[in-house]
Image 1 (tube, rainbow, N blue to C red):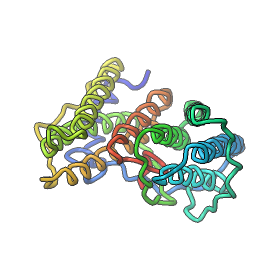
Image 2 (image 1 turned 180 degrees about the vertical axis):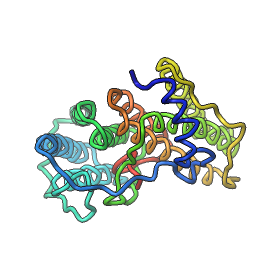
Image 3 (image 1 turned 30 degrees about the vertical axis):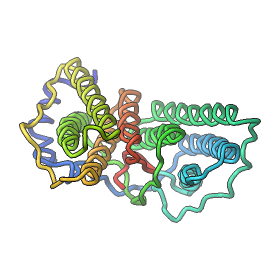
Amino acid sequence: MLLTRRSFLLAVGVGVAAGGLAGCSVFDPTIVGTPATPSVDQALRDAVKQAIDDETAAWAALLGYAQTVGDADGRFATMAATVAHHVAILSSAFPLNRDSAATPPAPPAPATYADEQEATDGFSLALNSLRNSHHGRAVASTGVTAAYWGSLAASARQLRAGLLSPYPAPGPINPGVRVAELPEADALSALLAAYQEAIFVARACLGFVAADDPDAKVMQEIVTGWKKERDSLADFTLAAGATPPPAKAAYALEQTGTKEAAVTLLTRVQRTLCTNAAAWAAATTDQQDRACAELETAAIATIDLGIGTAFWPGWPD
């Protein structure tokens, strides 16, 4: 059983408010993270060793793809830098601490492909395999470690999407800080509340984009996708015998007025969704598969707009 109705309602009615979730805006993130305590047990060391091999294989495939088809806009070099960053962090003494001073090793030899189609197939297979491997490690873990592997799986999804979509360089990380550890009821409630606000904000942003702008259709698809995720999570909560938190009548928004400002708002909303999904992955004891899938979905929701990439989706960076 995920949680009892009584524990969920207590968490929503008392714990969430006490934790400062009530009335918060997406511009005042509810999940701010906690200082990391470095520790690496043998099971984690074994998982890290395999993860380094998986990331390195994807790195070689990415370099081979770029070598075969070209990289006129530098997108694949940016993607390769993300993988190199992961290998550096994974190779450090305390991977969960995400030491920003970690130095990546020399890049692997690029994979060899006969033509563009073979390169595309090889690239896709490598990134899908990377995602599946990290997701499997997340499902087999608990706590912050589950969220850690879930974040790497989400990053692999972003990299895979980068084959056809923009992939801007991710922003800097916040070393020594990790996903907040919350009671599961609080984390799930916060994620649902974040979806409620995200839908409101995204609808408002649509008003600042011309109807004939191609991005208007993309934004509408984002709204539709977020509504689907919200409704699915609400059904999941009800099935657990609890009541989903209701949406507010309205939410505070910063001044937009332009498409650029609207996109900035969407960036913040998407980041908050990822952060809350990662917190649920860290909180749950039996729903890691579902929580990490939520993180992946949130991580790629806005990538067609050229926003939302991160070295560690869901981490409070």
